[in-house]
Length: 325
View 1 (tube, rainbow, N blue to C red):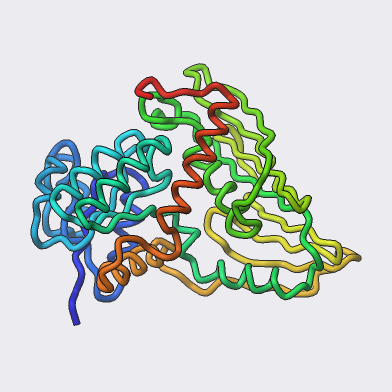
View 2: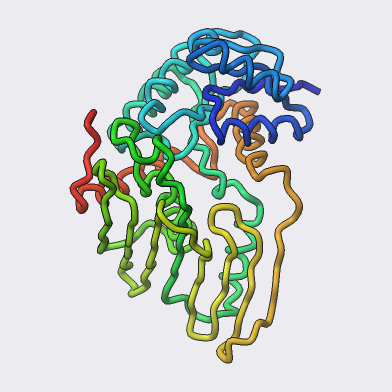
């Protein structure tokens, strides 16, 4: 059985989570890590027992032993980093948000198609098996006809320079708001007809708290909130005419509680044990590559484009523009 070798570009917090994930998977290992300096890459490699450390992304992209490269750099760098990998015909798994804007995403997908190279977005909640359980419970009719969805995600993370720097495509939307938008998309679809939204601004000009309401042709509403200033309960709630269901942690699904009209809990479901939750996107990418596909079915290119265009539209409403746009 082939053992796949995954390379990691970037050595920040998300890269650490991916390294732990790969260490716990069967048939997969982290073969190399790259940073902008060899010192950082070596420290990261030593921490996780990774064989190779590179002081440039180019060296990792050129490594013939690597089967897939995971990009864990700031949003502003995804386009250039992914293009570099694709130019070396390396399959790429790009951390969310896929790029800084829809134009960059379109450019990257076009280039990958031209070079016939796999690329997909690593929005981990799209790949989690527990998502199927959420959809199954909703489709069962136990809460009746769903009419409203609420979801929120907030962390006290505004002291992180990456999130406040406009040059790095900072702000709450691309980092945490994207999860609330994906939650609505996965359960209510993408056929919204109107968006009402507002945000507050950090001193650097990026969005720091977001309020977003999607209104659908059939009257359904998705009311979403995101913040990089405060700790939220992270709940996703789907309301119906016979009851409601609560999903704990829209950033990494933990459980589902179903309530009836009397607000009495009638059912409870808990996710199975996982390594970190990142393993599902990695396995999906490797399976797709083995099958000769250029995208993952869980997050196809068209869906990434829809989400990027939606976030562009929201930023346009807020007049939030990155300096490089």
